Length: 538
Image (cartoon, rainbow, N blue to C red; front, side):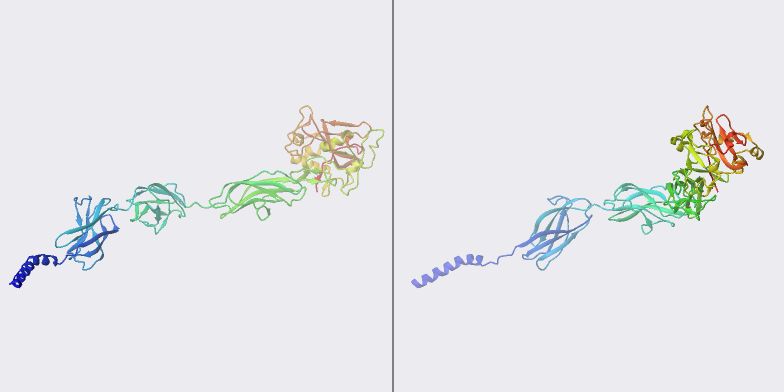
């Protein structure tokens, strides 16, 4: 009986604990686990992001991303929908139809048969809607044969930086950047473009251009015609006057005021002993281009008349400036330097001789004391300085007797004391008639004035020196013991032509006379007198 009761009790307890045991043994369901990934692509109207499915749980029927303009995802929410991934992993979805330049919030989601689960929320902003820039082309100015100026104005960059801008041009319509172009900076605003390398008398079409990340766009087209070709002519120039003249050198130059329409490739001065020298004669080479230049002449011959012209060469040829002439200096055996000048066909010293030696280096007797201790008046070659004062050497030159002149070797080699006929040639060149030149006494009109210096003559007796002869009132020495006379008043020059033995023709100028005196009667024609000497080139 006891055993039966125990069995009943155990069966009762089994029935009591059976529901509890059944409840404990029910299957436990798995939980879905997802994570919002990263943003991979953002455009003006779309976003692409990843979702990381870590655990599928009991199964995912749909998953993707949801986007909204607020973080509560209540304002115009949009979503992407992907279905049953089948396994865990990282998946990508894209949402389109977004607005440019707008702040959005995004999160991943996964839907099961019972619920929707979400990942964390992240924010992003869609890109600005980029378009091509907006611009206009400037009108054409400063048109030449080969150049012009244009440009443009970029009023909008289209939402992206303008990386290059300029103008492009062609001889055909609608030029592009594949044609000739300028590059004129970057960014918005106005710019100036310099067109070069154009062809004369040609129609060109021009457009401004601008490039951003959306591409290249062009402004309105304008056209123009380059200037007609101007024939190239030789340059225009002048010659600079001559300075710094020595026995063998001089300085000149020129000024090129127009290149004639083509670059000056060579310039300088050319010279010769005949008129109108060319570049086939002696010349300097002094650079290129227009403007002033200086030329140094070298290798000249002493006591020579030269003609000089500046020259300039371009593709049309060589042009020459105005012509100048000049005379180089000469020296005597003492080393005294003399300026020279040309009158007609004759080349004269423009100052009195002051040598103490003949041109064979033989000394001439110097008389430097007055009578009675001196031997002045001898028929031997003699000379002196005016007033026996060496200071007068460089002012007036020497005073020589006729015996010195008639040796034929008083002047430097290649030069000589002029004859009476050669004096007449000079006078006729200055305006005397033949009859006047052959007469005696005071002759002519203003020929003496043309020869006299600008100063040193007494009582307003100065001349114009228009001939360049530069005659000073050097005076003379008497042929006896009367000493010196005439400084400031007169001068006398020997000729080599005697009209009776030991008496030669002379020329003289006076302060109160405008003509020239030719004398065969005055005491100064006697060979014992001391007169000045001017040398004439052979």
